[in-house]
Amino acid sequence: MTDPISADRTAMKVSDEVAIEITKMNKWYGQFHVLRDIDLTVYRGERIVICGPSGSGKSTLIRCINALEEHQAGSIVVDGTTLSSDLKNIDKIRSEVGMCFQHFNLFPHLTILENCTLAPIWVRKTPRKEAEDTAMHFLEKVKIPDQANKYPGQLSGGQQQRVAIARSLCMRPRIMLFDEPTSALDPEMIKEVLDTMIELAEEGMTMLCVTHEMGFARQVANRVIFMDAGQIVEQNEPEEFFNNPKSDRTQLFLSQIL
Ligand code: ADP
Ligand code: MG
Image (cartoon, rainbow, N blue to C red):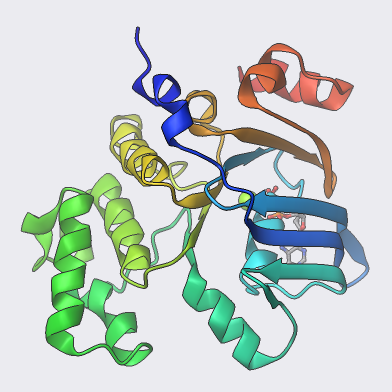
């Protein structure tokens, strides 16, 4: 099978520009040391897949990057802005970082279009017409413009997740974080969401994806990170990562999921 993504890998160029710089970052939940000395530099245009056993701290790491969780030591710099408890910085980072979760968190009482225009209108102060045009642009991109006036409950899980992605894109993020975006979906809907993510990757979006979709990792990621017990244990380009895992913990994990 020809693989259009890897054939075109050079077109998905990774730049020298740093998008996220995490240095010696530590986080505790109360007494529980959940993230330990995380060092991670993400370059613009990278597509990073984060994997690891349940409870290893993947979601916590992702959530620290857009300040949904606070870290207690070390630093996180996103697009040159240092994450601190300063609310101005948090606003700035959230406006540049889009996030997509396992559960789509759409507002059930708002239409698809309204879900997509809410934040641009109320947070960004975008005029309604312009916000609607942008929303329709991204709903077309995720291939469901015809659903714009329906409510989330009328859509399939895969469609709702694509709305959630479109909604994030309406805020024009420079970085997208995904936390197991397909793990709540029925198998037949997983592909349509992954296809949307692949398109984003092809367009050069900087992406960090927590996912167990190893096919996606092989096809799209330029780097795979393995986490265990709050640490980054191993990272490599997908080919090396899957064919030649270095640590025992990575080998064990891969033997369980592949
Ligand atoms: P993963 O996404 O890799 O499954 P998480 O980041 O969700 O891991 O969780 C890492 C560890 O932190 C787990 O042991 C989990 O129970 C714990 N944890 C997660 N969220 C909280 C919280 N809000 N309070 C206390 N412990 C938490
Ligand atoms: Mg998680």
